[in-house]
Length: 129
Image (cartoon, rainbow, N blue to C red; front, side, top):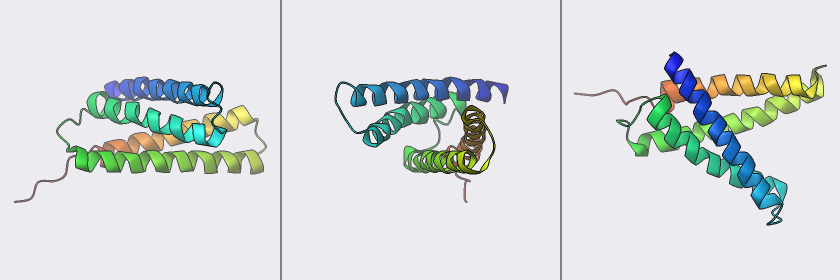
């Protein structure tokens, strides 16, 4: 489990850095609208997340792409939506500094993503006889 958490962190930080770089590149020199640039960043970061978690975090090379790819894309989309909604709610209703709220959200979403990735997206389908 320690190894999985290590790789989850490495892959997650790598994906975040690419997300940030793509948004910055699309926004500043190309003049893409921020929300559109954020979607582009998300889609780029998803590539690192999927391949990194498949290969390193969950060692799920045996799980077919036709199963794991759509499942993990669903997990990633759900995580993105939970992130936005939870952050909105904490900012609006909790008497917390925005940085504390963001830290809570990022931790909660990371736990959600790890659990769904391990138990569903990259889990091997049970064999039937």
